Length: 523
Image (cartoon, rainbow, N blue to C red; front, side, top):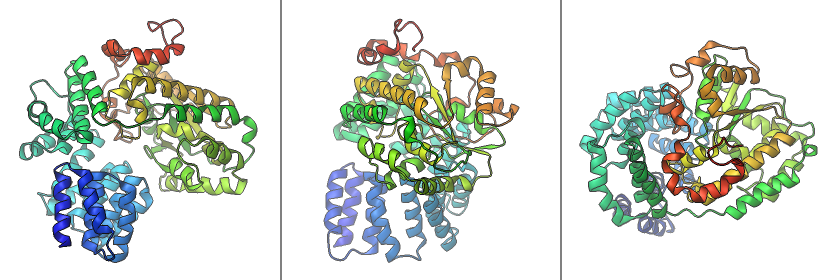
């Protein structure tokens, strides 16, 4: 009976009826006895369909207790933990899964997924190649190989792989998503035409998150084709299809409270003097991947990518996201010994890397810099800025993760940008950490000069490898990964004008940053 119900749950999920599937699954889990098979189904459901990774984490903990010696159990645990950002624990479970069953394709897939999250692309390729050697038709590993290829800059190979996979399953939105990341999509591309003419009408009937994702992919394709009006409307339709509430008043309150109540006096001598961390902060789509790759090409620099480390630490000390009173209290009251312990937790991830400097490029760490300064007051911070209109329009017309809810509405996006700039200006006045401000446009105009400035700021001698970042350095999985490996062009500037007829709500918010009008450089 239970087996029939779990089969029904997966059938509902595959058809896009996620809420119905979750209701049926919760009814099973509410029973007195839940077997390991049902737990596994529940974990897979939340991993593949609901994307409720915290719920999957609760369930996989029970599964590990029930089946501690099964490779598949540890493979699922590794994948779940990687999704929530606990990479050390994820790596342990991935290693355990492989030790129990070295040739198991699912174990290798999980290990590759963890490696991708760690930016360890060579490891990821090794795992998927091992899986495909013994199980050449293992679909998840085939797709995972595409992401690993894209991560190391082999976009052409990823494109060829995606086309082959798409021929077999033309409705696989995951394959299409990878393909659109790897390739520039032409008007006559059969993948694009299939999405627009066949898949879109069917997804429109379903609505919700799946439709929103498809519309964002179409928006990216229209942008590739130079159909900018259609591109913008596609992104706007995507946001209307899956509305993500965002409280601009709460966010403004968070920013204003930090600016009003946190002062220089709140940073007495405490924390560890470790100078290895280099935080790159700012708004998405501001050029952070470019400066990361420049620095990571230096032989003494490594990167941990967009690490959730600092965010997880703030949660552990009882600071909820964008809660101003809890954040102010933490900044003011973390004792010296507590700051040292928190710093040690943060540095643990860096200890596995043999590097004098380690980049952490989680951009929204700008919201958490008060806690970071209490832990590591000598660590360096690079603030990357780009023209506000270009930044915001790029944020609006990208497939950013759902927690970037401030990008749902142009007015909200503009208000959030103003708040970010206000907070960064405040941090520059009160934090003990060295802070370097770089402008994306100046990097484009004077690559070597700005690269030298960044290298000197992090306390290292110049190395010409930093100008060869498109060939070497640590690769990236971010949205900018493909662009940053191409020659630098000034065409990346003023792109917002392609969409100007739609941007009045954004202009209204950003006007204070353009005191001489939008035809002049922003302040």
